[in-house]
Every structure is written in C-alpha cells, then in structure tokens.
Image 1 (tube, rainbow, N blue to C red):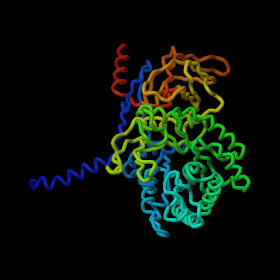
Image 2: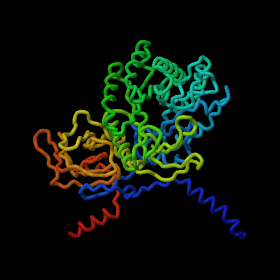
Image 3: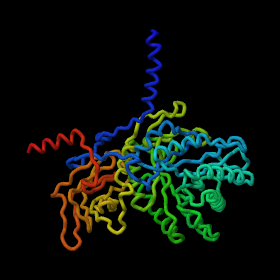
Image 4: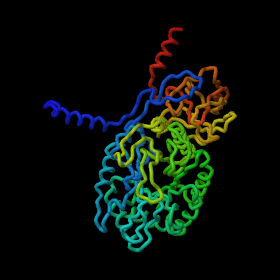
Length: 503
C-alpha cells in the first residue's frame, strides 16, 4: 500500500459509508413500470409528497418489532418522511427497557421517538409486551400473554407510569396491547387489563387518546362484550378507538365483519372510532406469518396494500400499513424467519438489516397518500353506479379546497393477480361534472387522459357524468380533473406531446 493510498482509503470508505446512509428512493416519473396497458394516452405521473408537504392524519406506517430487535430503526429511518405518512406505530418494549428489576434504560426508545419527531412524525405507542423477569409478568412476544400475577401487574403499572410520564409531551395516542386474543388471555382478563392500563396512562396524561383491543378477525365478536364491560363500569370514555387487524387473501372480503363491528360500536358510543391498526401482505412466498405460503410478488403486494388502504378509507376507518421494512423473527421457538411484509426489502439481522431495495409497494403507498390525504373527503351519499362484468368496488370523494369530485374503484372479485388485465366499465357519477378528467393508476402513479368522446354530461337541475369503456383492473385507480393533481412528465410523455403538436 502506498503512502497516498493509506491516506485516501479511510477517506474513501468514509464517503462510501455516508453515501450508503442516504435513502435510495427513485422519485422519477418512471419509478414503477408494469405491464398495465389501459389503452389511454399518458399525460404524466403523480409527484410523491413528503410529510412536510401534506397532512395525512388518517394513515399510520408500522415501525413495529423494534422492542424485540427484529428490525433496525436506523436502517430505514431515512425512508419514513418521504413516504408521506406522518404517524408511526411503535411497540413499547418493557422487557428491553427494564432488564433488571427496578432498573430502567429508556435510551433506545428516547432515540427512536426523538428522531421520528425531528422528521415531522407523530407516534402511536402500543405499550405491549410483557416482561419475563417477573413471575407472571407476561411474555415478551406475540402470544406470550399479558401480566397476570400481583407482582407482574404492579411492575407493569410502574413501567407504564414511567413511560407515560416520560413521553407525555411527545406522545398523545396510545394503544394498550397487540392482539391480546392471540394467546393465553381470556376475554375478561384482557378487558380488565385494558381498563387498568388506560387508567394508568390517563392519570399521567389526562387528554391522552387510548385505543384498545387490536383484535385479529377471528375475534371481532369480542367488541360487543368489551364495550358492555366498559359500560357496566361507566368506563366508555376511557377509550377513543377500537383497533382491529385483518389478513385475508382477498382484502375486500374482510369488510362485512368490520361493518358489523361499526354497528356495535355506534350502539354504545358516538365518539369511539374504528381503526385498522395492522394489515399487510408479503412480497414473496414465505413459510411464516399471516398470509404465508402463497406466491405473493412485489406487484400483488402493492395491489393488496393499496386495495386495503382505500378499502379502509371507503369504510370510514383510520388505517395502518404493515409495515415499513422486512423484519426477522428470531427469539421464539415457534416463529422464526424473515417476514417480507415490508415496503422496503432488508437483509437479516446477521447482515445488520441492510436495506436491499425499495419495493413497488413503497411507491404505490406514496401515490395513495399524495392524493388521499386530509384534503380529500369521502362522500357517503354519492356512490357511483358501475356496469361491469367484474365485481367492482367504487366510492366517491371530493377535494376539500375546491370541492371537485374524485371517483376511485377497482375489481374486488379475487385475490390480486400478478397480471394486469383490464375490463371495460360504464361509470355514472350522479351530480358530478368534470372539466378535464384523467384516469390514474395508483400502482405506477401514471395519469392518462380520458378522451372527450368517452364521457358525457347530462343536463337538468343535477348534471351527472357518464364514463364509457373505462378500464378497471384488480388495483385501485381513480378519475378526477387533471387540475387537482401534481403531475410530472416523463420523457415519453414529452415525446408524445411534441408529436401531437406537429399534427
């Protein structure tokens, strides 16, 4: 090694390390390319929005499993703000914080919370799981059981008190436990535990919003008994939201029981809201985790995630995307291996959870939140009429700033496919008119002009618009006026426009 090499090599390695820390996010108009061919003329691609450009209070992105070190916050933190979602879901990590009785080390959690807040992110904090250093202190992981012994519950109360006190000025939204129905907890036991924990939090933070249950779909019927438990004890005001999780191969089949839950909630309280707190699918075949052993791909993951996001929006529920990055189960005897539900592909723990690539689903979620944010309001009394040989889900919304309409829809008849075949549909938007409508695919973000002869506006006191031969496929698309969107033109779109100008 020469003298100059010895001097320059450390500098070179330092530069490489700094470059590696930067997020590798493609923000070009061609960031996602699929085989979709809607037969329309492209006019541009949605411009992604960071958290400092939009308000997206209805969405949450998962940053779970850091409490058990199944993932690394540092590996993906730079990818959070560009996604556009302003709230992250964290799990509390009692066992990581109190490794010896009475000795608390919050440094790991301080770092994550302070860093996230510095990026403009809010925290939804779930206090699970338990701590095996105490007899009856509950398990540290999924299905491990809540604290049940007198000693374990007293230690839990102390940890929750210290945590709420420490972060009372940094965290407003809390959740008690993750999937308490999955494991060793009888309903009456976790009902009482939920009340106990919510009261501890509210003693320290009186205006805290505390959500509860986080049930898997097999136990949605526990919502009624839980609310009755609260009502009998005059405790309904403790809870701000009922949280549910759902994992079905076709995401649209999950909503009938969700609507039943909503009816039950409304019968007890006009203020408790419904919150889908965890749901996502894999980007490849995998042997473990929900929706395992199915030939998922990056495309079908993106379709599934976006259908579920807009299904939640259409059913009036807040929505969580599970999860930001792949993670590795590695501390339980029954659940070990990589879970590929992340929007980012990462390596194993032994490789430092290194980011390997940004998946199609990351960009698709970016596309969703760039439009379906707090400037878009769902309309409950103006569903479009759809004539199509496929079973189509369709809803209508409007932009808050200009009251202009948007129609979103997709083929909901089956599990998302790894192909992009479209089917024509006639869509009637009653009471709505469009000046320059475009058809937008949320997987790619590409927008296409709808030709004037493909739609007509009816007259009368309430003008309506009828769209003919509109492409529908098994991923969400929407129609709105071009002026509502921030679009960027690819070189291909520029070429098409130049060619059209010559004619």
